[in-house]
Length: 362
Image (cartoon, rainbow, N blue to C red; front, side, top):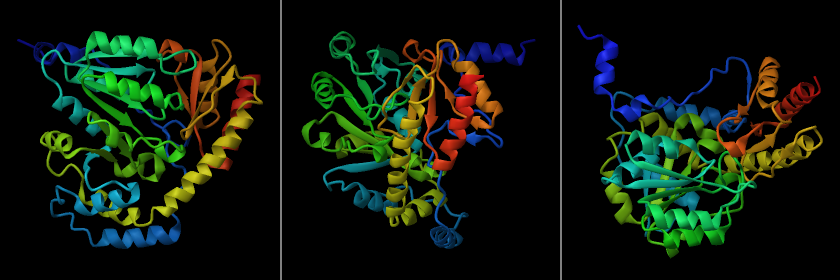
């Protein structure tokens, strides 16, 4: 008689069996500086108004599948031209999956740089697409010649580029980005998840290139719990990708919350400005410590390199001290001995710095 294990082995796709699930660690009471979240909650007065809005939400009814009020608020906040359309997802992850599904013709491939956001590769593998990763330089810049050669060789149907990049925190050269777009035979998705922490803005690329979509999120500015991803581009692209979106993917509580909070977006602009200032102070403080390297950042996190062979020990020491950061050692050869630290409040940053200094000295 076949066991459950036998049934699973016989029926589940081999490429799925070979994957590891995306791991999210339990945090308990740890100071959480591992997931690029905004550390500040809503101000009390705004929170009270938001809760009043939620009181009127009819959770016994399905949400509006088009989320028109949310889209209107996003258009105003983004300054998006009426010639472009929006598609909303349950976080950026769903949008990455929908775009990849739409382009998953037999033999199609996905290309991105590495290290970058791991879901580009994982979702391509979920869908049975060929994935090609092109390594960045040692300074995490685009390797222009290698990238252009890879595009010519693999003819990708889909290219993902994060601006700024995660987990490195840097912006890629805008001239090279446009060159990549120009030579790519497929669609290029520019992922601006960390837009709030940089002066860069890729939205004008839509005016110059018909094979570009812009992806953003509200997660990093302070609404991570809502899970709202944003895809902007020409109606022809959005219309086809939208056919794959499951109905009611943006729930009523998220729609009501986002519509209300987008009307008060100045609060998040103020908070992200404070985070940018805290990032500057944090980088200065980190550069005083005995770390091998501290990279500049255009995001709400900072990448550092621990002394050779000590990244895991430093990570564990911080955890014992009540601070959770991200250990990237082993994730990619370019990330050897690297740790990623989310920018917190000034008080949280000081707590982390004290624990980090102790771990490096002990």
